[in-house]
Length: 191
Image (cartoon, rainbow, N blue to C red; front, side, top):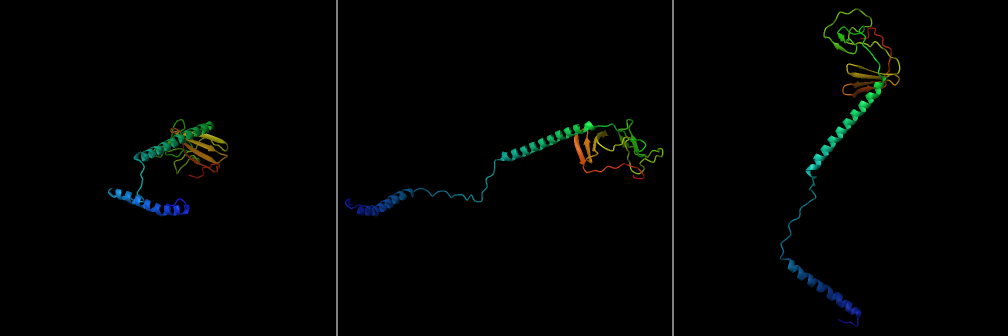
């Protein structure tokens, strides 16, 4: 090694350095050859990771809870809506003079059912003769009103053209129809 000439020393180092490193690495490699070959690695590109089994159970439980809550909220909304329309309650009774001859009316005029037989009734031009129908004694031509017949609540908003039906016992909304046009009813062979 020549200390007087740094360039020469660098050349010697570059020349000797790699040879020493190569020799050192070679001797270490020979020492590891006695080890067993590593186990084969698995190809994970086609594998899948599945969530634990409780995740599916939890998802189903949460979905069921959400459905139950939604149903309960709908019941609460329906009950509140029914309470709101009941403030427009009016007293109506069925008109026996318009009832079809197969219908039997309750004494209070709030219910009608098919008696299964045709009764002989006095002739009345307002009586339904073909289909089992009946009119109420009261008539309305404006405003809002609500009444109950046979456990069904009926709300009419005459001005908005809205008719809504409610199951009074279950306190749920059954159906609404918007955009209705109301006309005076004349029973002349209309059946």
